[in-house]
Image (tube, rainbow, N blue to C red; front, side, top):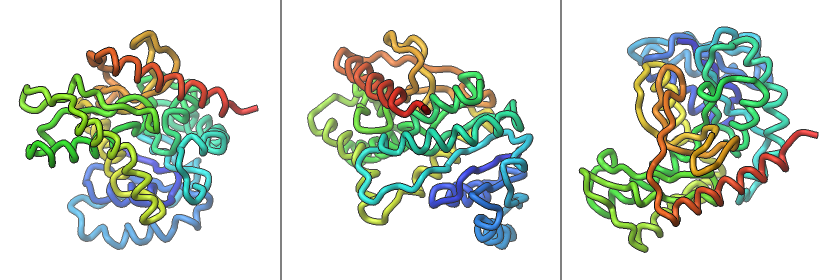
Length: 303
C-alpha cells in the first residue's frame, strides 16, 4: 500500500505520524513545497520506526514520486489567516492551489483514491473531481466526520453511553450551515429525542474547531486521526459507514454539489452513498447547506 501526503503543515505532519504507526502503509511519500522542507518530518519518523510493529518506508518526494499511489491525502493549503472564522474564506486560494496539483497527481496515479483534508473541503472535493476527471467514488473529503465525532462524544457524556455505541451524524457542509440529523440519532435501537439541549450540543460541536484554533492556532490531531481512519477503510476494504464529503447526485433533488452524507467506505473509495430519512426541518437544512456550498463553488471558480 503506497500512500502520499501532500502538504506537511500541522495537519499533514500529524497524519504522516498516524500513518507511520498504524502498521498498514508499506510506502509513505511526503510532499511539501520542497523536498528539503519535509526532511525534518521524514527523518524524525524514520528514527521512530524501531518502535512500531511493521516499519514503513518513508521518503521525501516531489509530485513525481507520488506515481503509483494507492491513496493520496491532500492537506496542502494557503496560509490560514489569524482569527479565521469561516473556512470558505480559504476557497479562492486553495482552489488555485489544487488546480496546479491535481491534474499531475491524477496523471501519475490514475487509479488512486483522493482523500481531501484541506478546507473548505466541500468546495475542494468538487474541484478535485473537475480538475482530475476522476469518477465520483475516487474523491472524497473528511467532511463532517470530525464534527460528527465531536457530537457523538457530547451525546455520550449526556446519556452515559459509550460514543462508539451512539449513531448520530452531522450532515451537510463542513462549515456554518451543517446540521444534526437528529431524526436518525439512536443508541441500541432507541431514538435519541431531538431535545433543545441536544441541538445545543450540535451547535457546540460545530464551533469546536474554532475553539481549538483559538487556544493553539490550528487543529491537527482529530482531523489527522479521521483522515487516517478513512485511509485505513480504503486500504483494508473495511466497508465502514461514515459521513464524508462527496458529490451529491439526486438526494433531495440536489445535484453536482459536494456535501457530507453517510457513505460506505471501502477499497473502491465510496462504495455506496446512503440516503438517511430526514424530517422536514433537516431536509430544509440540507437544501440550505447545498445552496451555501454551491455559491462558494461558483465564487471560487478560477478565472
